[in-house]
Length: 399
Image 1 (cartoon, rainbow, N blue to C red):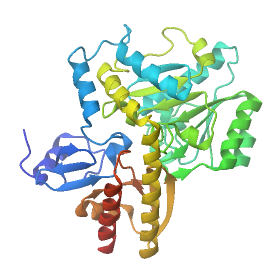
Image 2 (image 1 turned 180 degrees about the horizontal axis):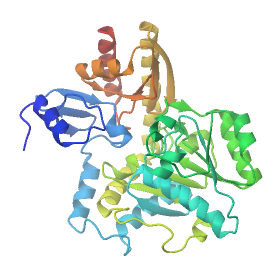
Image 3 (image 1 turned 180 degrees about the vertical axis):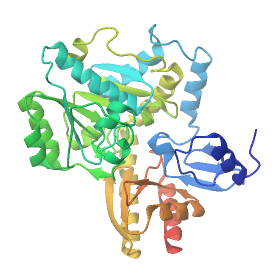
Image 4 (image 1 turned 135 degrees about the horizontal axis):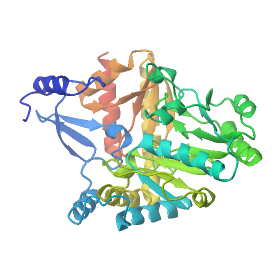
């Protein structure tokens, strides 16, 4: 049944959908490129991108064609049989990142669950069964299934769900001394987002990146890089760890990799793959052929050198414009982030800024308690970047 108005749509959502999200009164019916359109024809410049999923915006021709071609062949086989959509995407990702083997799943939290399991299995198979400790960071976000939630450094998200899987330790972000004190011969892995997006767009210090690399060498622990939001070009480099110079053993992906469809992945070094056996881990839907076909089309575009240069250029333009807005509006604070994962701290409630921007035709998101987050498509034009700044200016002026 098609809704006849925004109010009807929101009312239906409240009637039939579990109340786990605070949704606005908006009825989006179509998307094209960097824009979404509502039932009344109003245009919105989308700087949320499905929370960094739509890396090339809506309905990119290469992605649409790849998915249409694949769904006309087969849409699902399960992982009981090999198939070229998975192999082709894995081969491309491994060539670009210099990792050795890939595992496909459905989502970011599943990718992180998989990486945690594979890291522990690696040491167990080597006979080091006591190496189970995973070190993560306060305010990190790794997902909402139990293992990924235990890794997440936000206690409020675990409230009311009972006991979590054990052997996870959370230390303050960028606290080099704390990391040195906790990592030892019993540590299985250090797990981190190269740039902690959900926790407040927190950037990694050079000292912390160097310390992680040094501890990995000294104690032989693994490093798990959660690239679910930072990977595939978001920071202006193909991987976030490339931006910060982190040496990782397992890298997790989701969001952008599926080009709009549910898809997650774990890339691993060969020594880890060498310790795995059939049945150690698995998934029914993981690596869906249609999602893999769309993902390959996206990765082929994003991996072009000139494409990543354009991401870096748009980032500089947005930072310049945001600094001008900070100078103009005293309630804005500082810019955080890199590439096209940017945040601005604010003394006014973030929800009010999000609502004001939406009224003016710009969709933005939040991060942490007091950060407005910008996640535009990676292929936004210079004109669209300037349009976003102009709309945001208008919205802030009315607050």
